[in-house]
Image (tube, rainbow, N blue to C red; front, side):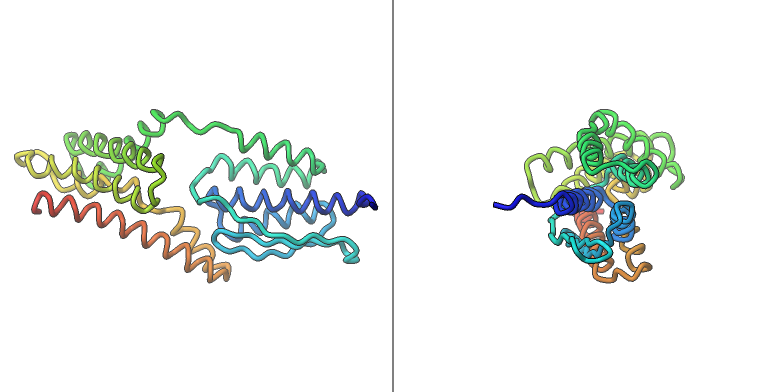
Length: 258
């Protein structure tokens, strides 16, 4: 059996690393353009050209040297999408580090493993600051102090329920519906039985923590870059999330007969 040449092994290892980079970027909320630029930046620093086909959940990669003597072709499916800005910024810095410092494939793998192992913020920290963000939205809508307290409680409870339902591996849109329903039910209770002390601002802003900002921004970014297929898919995903939020609000309104 003939052992693979060092060059063949390098292009194969580099291709697998680039596929991992692309999958991590897509699953962390990166746009199609950002994913393509990051992969091209790393492959160019090794002297290989890259061709990419990126869909919403799959990335296909071909890399080759200038003489087309060595090439790699494979595809990888990305995990379910979320938002992880810490991972996005870490991979972006890593790609420039590869260009400036000439990191090897093994060093890139080590850095990716370190980034993937980074811990998320503690749950109480996330709940607290998402609740404070809800307070800010309420204040921007001219809510008073009682409205803001109501929104804080509703937001924290809604996010908590969404996280718990997500742990049970329900459909992500069902999880968003449960979060919206919980938050609006709490805020709607204040509007229904608050004897005039709580206004509509609390009910309207209690679900804003669920607004799909990243999918909608990425949809617009992909559309501007000419990645129309991904733009349509991301935009449709944002629409379904918005629909789930609206259904949660509607359920609460039917319960309270608003």
